[in-house]
Length: 60
Image (cartoon, rainbow, N blue to C red; front, side, top):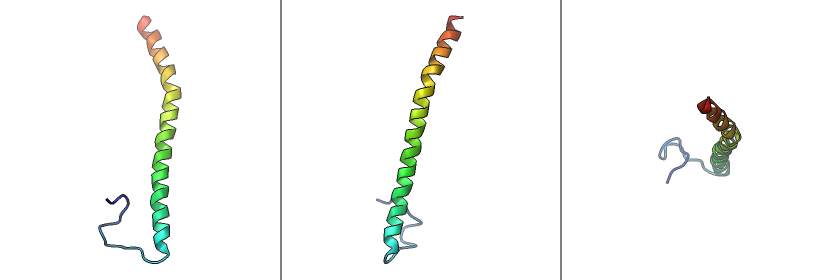
């Protein structure tokens, strides 16, 4: 399975640069995970406020 690629075998890192390539892929995965977690936590704090506000508007 291919997670990060510039093509299917077009560019293949050799030598010590292979470690850097693997670290770059892991860093990208970590940033995607962090941004999804950050968005979830931000919306978790915001949604209860929005729900109570919409309930107030429905009662009016």
